[in-house]
Image (cartoon, rainbow, N blue to C red; front, side, top):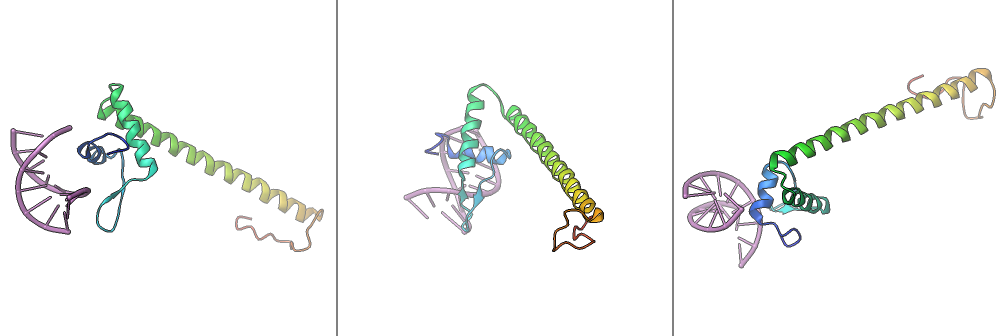
Length: 112
DNA sequence: GTTCTTACA
DNA sequence: TGTAAGAA
């Protein structure tokens, strides 16, 4: 309340709307992280700019879609580089070139 | 004495 | 959104 100048009522309402989800301590008291505080200030700004609850929800839902897309993209890249490395190592083993002492004919990669 | 939930205006 | 009531 002190950090955001929002009333307890407002903060709890935003939580009710799923805009912030503070952790609870053993006594069921809300424990706000720095990110939670940031989120509350951001919500306050949006409201000041005339955006309503539905609009703010839409904004964060869009953020979630983007985050989800980035996550899938990252997994795809890691998989591709893994495949590239695995095939490269395998090629070096089969050709007998640059074979490291501890490497056998068959790699220990789970996918090859 | 404070926070939590639920409910009413 | 503010406030009341009862539990925690």
